[in-house]
Length: 65
Ligand SMILES: [Zn+2]
Image 1 (tube, protein in one colour):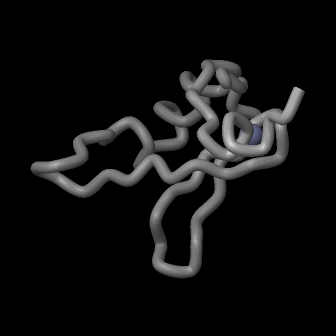
Image 2 (cartoon, helix red, strand yellow):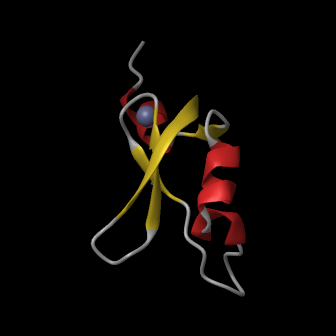
């Protein structure tokens, strides 16, 4: 299920987590060379991603109709 990003926060290990409109969080790690999301390391990049949609697997799992 696609959910819009409403904010960002860091987890206890310092990895970035996108907070989605449904209340779930989704990791958006910048961990090169495997995961390159340099945008998440800057406030400008994160601001640009506000309102964009990510697939929320947690919603898919809990969606019983
Ligand atoms: Zn969700």
